[in-house]
Amino acid sequence: MSDVIKLLPDSVANQIAAGEVIQRPASVIKELVENAIDAQATHVQIILKDAGRTLIQIIDDGVGMSETDARLAFERHSTSKIRCADDLFTLHTMGFRGEALASIAAISQVELRTRRHDAQLGTRLVINASQCESQEPDMCPVGSNFMVKNIFFNVPARRKFLKSNQVELSNIVKEFEKLALVNHEVEFTLIHNDNVMYKLMQGTFRQRIAALMGNNIDQQLLPVTIDTSMVKVQGYIGKPENARKRNALQFMFVNGRYMRHPYFHKAVMSAYEQLIPEGEQPNYFLRFTVEPEAIDVNIHPTKTEIKFEDEMPIWQILAAGVKETLGRFSEVPAIDFDTKDAPAIPAYSGHVEVHHPEIAVDPSYNPFKSQNKPGGGAAHHHVPDNRPMSNWDDLFANFERKKREGLEQQGANSMAEDTSDAQQTVLPVDDVQSVYLQLKGRYILSPAKSGLMVIDQHRAHVRILFDRYIGQLHTGNLSSQAILFPEVLHLSAAQSVALQELLPEMEQMGFQLDSMGGNDWAINAIPAGIEGVDPVAMVQQILESVDNGGMPVKRRIMEHLSLTVARSAAIPVGRTLQQEEMEVLVADLLRLPEPNYTPDGKTIITVIPMEQITKLF
Image (cartoon, rainbow, N blue to C red; front, side, top):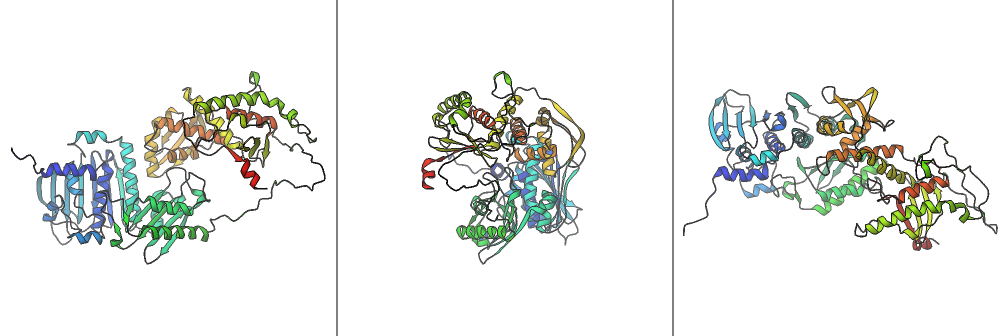
């Protein structure tokens, strides 16, 4: 029987390796820019055509390569970074595997022009799918000039896998941000289709953050400085009030290398406990410096997953350092004994009189118009009455019918969802009693068999309006409302790329945005029915909340629009409600399929157990 095991040709092995190292045009840029940084470049220029599909050109002023080195650099496992296995534990360079150039050459057409500073002539090398087509002397400046053309031209399935130009350009910008942030002493230029997207000069770490993320972020940063024998951490964290629900700016670097480290991320988050709402994320830009032998970067070809030798002590040091910074800059709130609107505690005189709370409602404000009234009529407002109440049953008897309708609907929904998430604390139908009080213009209280039911009135109305508005959007009857004086939207390059990607869906939703050149946009029209909402802030929020994955873009924008409108139109915190308004609000809420949480996951209804109340006494 003949032998069946064969040694793969280098071209095939390189294509296999390219599947791990080179996933998209952004991967090519990462590898080539890191090589330029290792070559001591002080200026790196990135030129793109069609988001890297047609051309990726990286020009640097580093040390360059000789004729022999230029040819050998494209062989697998050829590198100038290490010589033996022990060098893996003392790495001071970004690259060391010797796979990047071989992988790039295997799936594209590469042209390299390079010259060392001590040579009169450089060399020009042309490689096509791992095959060297020519190498000849060339007059070129000191440094290296890589031209990567037609990426994945010989791997049709991989080329088809690439997303649209806008998505790929967005990935490139994200990779560029990581490289430019940590190498703030290097000048960077990014050009796409002859349009200069970034031109970054040398500067401090803080200046580079502002240049990439926008000057307005400079006022949001708090400096972090940690200096121990085990680790040094320098950088900036965001103020708690600037935390984001999505797309927070979170960057960690170790020894000049970007890393993803969920364990250290939790250390930062632990310092923000009780300072930011649940579900929000703070911004941070942190640079770690440790001894090279204390980390292992040779875990994954992308070299972003890094193992630390002393993870637990560094976790504690990082958490303490971030907490110290938040405290030093007075970002930890002081204890506030709020006495405003606090109820008076009368002396016991042998009898108790319960008075109707005084109600002051703006006559023009009627958020419940055409809700749950026979014939679509508005809710009737009672004149405030300060007479003693002697019969609770009589006072709330008129609510029984409307409440029962809402509870029956809620009960049906609860039974249909018995197999849903166990954490969904749907209030039992027979647990609600017909007593409603308002606390500090924010919460609606009602006794329940199991304890005390508390409803956040603003969140409840947000939920009601969200479901109503998104139902209108699903009908497809969308129209635009022109803005008399168009609003100007100033975006960063990354945001402008994201907006171009979302533009078709936003136009279908009723937006009209026109480019003014550069990264400025004019908002000429917004969806009808959302007048009074800041259009610039709304578009900014959409850009922050919409990413490239998950549900379809149109649906994400639709949900964001509905939530934005609901928040702006909902009953504000502090609004005093009449008894009948509370009745209608609760009945509308309990009739919804998901009354317990807002669309963004915040709790609307909670029940304080009777056992807990008993313990207080």
